[in-house]
Length: 206
Image 1: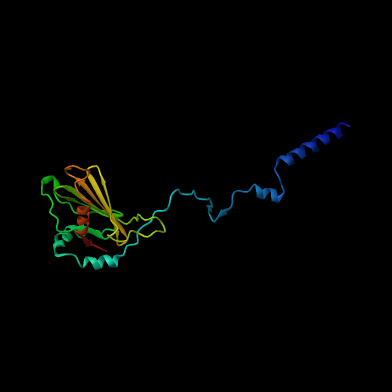
Image 2: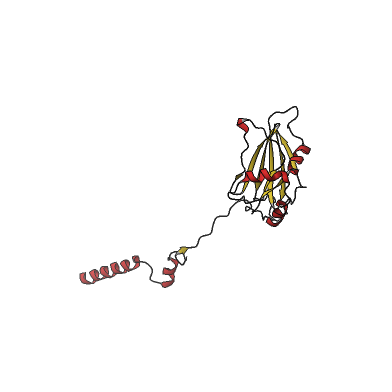
């Protein structure tokens, strides 16, 4: 009798050990397998980015080069000031025929090329004018760019003003920072800002 009881206990212990070893059904083993891999890379869904994607302008270099060939004779000195460094990623528009102040603190500086455009600063008697060009389009996706200089947008601020427009597929902004204000918000009128914009010519292309 003792032998039979001992044998039953041994068989029961062996069965428990076998159950603790885990499932032997292939379908159950498959469920416990690691996530599916493609090659050596585990596939994961990328997080969604908020907001619209950045839109880079498509530049009409042919039109810019054609307009550069029509640059006025008075623009020669301005073209020389650009130098022979890396060209800007947009057609460089600069003013011609303007007279800058010649004080030690207001010496003319050459245009500065950036990764998406350029800027150039001019010191005039009533204001400083900063001409900016950028290849980042202001138009929303699916909409046309402003197109040409006829679509000028003039705004004024405290002792300042801005004139924005598009040309050749690039965006341009002229910032006017007043040296003195004789009444009103700005030292420059909309017509004066447009006259400054009319003096711009293509000084550099690719």
